[in-house]
Length: 233
Image 1 (tube, rainbow, N blue to C red):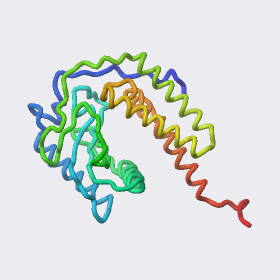
Image 2 (image 1 turned 90 degrees about the vertical axis):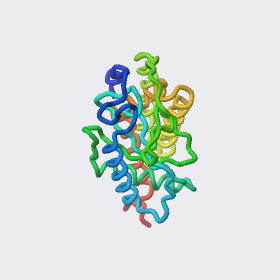
Image 3 (image 1 turned 135 degrees about the vertical axis):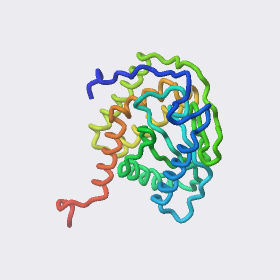
């Protein structure tokens, strides 16, 4: 992609939580009930024998002070996950669900996720929709990352993605995705949602680069599992 397109949006800071969702720092009851309804629909869509649900949470910019008009609402089903195969299953079903259903709350896009209960989730704010209380209440702090830092990090990630997209190698593409996610996770652990690594990842995701790499991995995986006429004996 043209690196000139990697221009971060202005860093947003609001003095209050999004009034479309929150009233006096508590989730509006009507919003909470609708999110519970969405979570149940997603759980039914997952169609697993035993979901082992521990919590239903929201996090991200709309559970903190950094939201803007493009911010979505991250709704997590927190479950006990026992194997890597389950992780892949939930991830695949999550992608299908979010592609199939265009769900909005007060014109805010709702994104569904399945989160392992053993995984430490780093977010400026985490709210339990199930229990109607904050698990991690956000702090009203102005972000310190600069646009130049975010753009530089995003260019680094984008360069790795471009190389992977030219590799025609499934392992290379997977390792690139894993490395970028690992760097983002390290940023979340050290600096939270306002870390340079996380903001660079979100910039690339908004520009479609993360999804492009994911589709490329799916394409290579499909080819690896297929047999063409030239391979027939």
